[in-house]
Image (cartoon, rainbow, N blue to C red):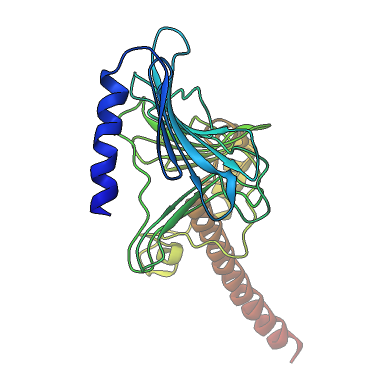
Length: 285
């Protein structure tokens, strides 16, 4: 190994100091081309010259790139990696548009990915692209963080090519599903929510109706209120619901309050009926 490294030192020296006269320097299966089109080519001695790699410089105009090419049982070189003089790195592309630009070189078989970032023994990994889709996974004993800066103009999006933004989390932690406008709500959904169970935590409940100091409205008051307002007391009107929406927890409490008030009315009515029956029985004796 030390001998091979010592042999490569004059190769790199010649590549970057020689004149533009092209010439080849051969070390076993490694060929260094110096001059105008500098390159280093090495082929495998096991499978023949149809297999190998090449590092060479390329001038696309306005800059000089460093490229790595490979060939697999072929006489044609395929560029697999490109580093521009601007510092952009392209894997699978010779025109990287970012600091790291990864593109699949050819059609990938099922299960392969355009890029994979693998972690340690805790099985944290990241897959991008490929026929089987992409995955981002945290470690077995850790967590996965997707982070954005706070602020009203910063957000994270999950997009669909055909539907646009399908999920948004803004800098304040508000989540929008099917909408980018949360109107101050922690969760805003533009669509129908399906759930087997929903739990709403309430600080107060309607059992105060059964307390001894509760003043049960008279039926005459309720009748007058309905005739005037077209809805029950303490229940929002249709216009209020249209403008402000419906608070499920508060609405359930208000409905229970009316059920409990109705129960008290029935109990009172039953007492009156029982008293009336006693009077009728006394008259018939």
